[in-house]
Image (tube, rainbow, N blue to C red; front, side, top):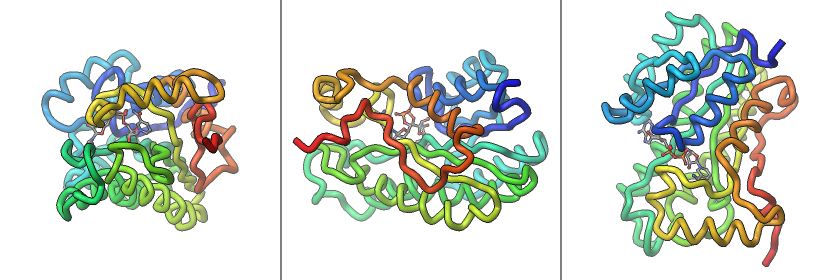
Length: 257
Ligand code: NAD
């Protein structure tokens, strides 16, 4: 029997076929899970619907994570369609373009607030809203995506590095809160991957070249690498793992100089 047969997985963050969330959704579906996808705005909805058809996923509606009302209505929809939830994937981040270039010290209060709200707080709000559905499933697995810019300085990553640090700390606090309910919370720290969001970071292409040349495995990471790891973490292989940040970066983060 496929390891995720009978499991229900809600995946937030598919924008197009390059999205890490899309690779995760495919990997979860390949392991037998039923998938639910969301979108933000009409142009993403137009991309998400045909992708959902490819894997027989349910499109559960719009969910802009800056809106408590949209989060609440998403989980009402999940409740009425599925009645419970086993896996929640949070593959969402946003910062204003001007905050992903130049000096971090120039980030103003509003730019900081937006990046932290969308990229870090949203995990907390989603977990709280999902909890009754995880309880109905007698446990669950939450996964988010982070980047090594949380711990070290990468040119132009700036406020997003600070948001990822908050996100990783939230993973640990959520794991402690939700562990007694049988809910595991983890993050995958992926090496650089060419996606729509990554294109917003100035000189991202240089980062890809440097990572490929320097990483011990001498290659970049693919979205499918991350998808396969996500599916393993959601299944029996991840049963004893919670509160962790797992690096899927071809080894880049172990290097000193
Ligand atoms: P992507 O652009 O495909 O996905 C980002 C998603 O965030 C999009 O679907 C977008 O609609 C969604 N989003 C933005 N604001 C939102 C909001 N207010 N409400 C709901 N959704 C919103 O890019 P990606 O690279 O696949 O990013 C997915 C995650 O992976 C992000 O957390 C990103 O930081 C992380 N990550 C990416 C890389 C990389 O190099 N691409 C590396 C490590 C971690």
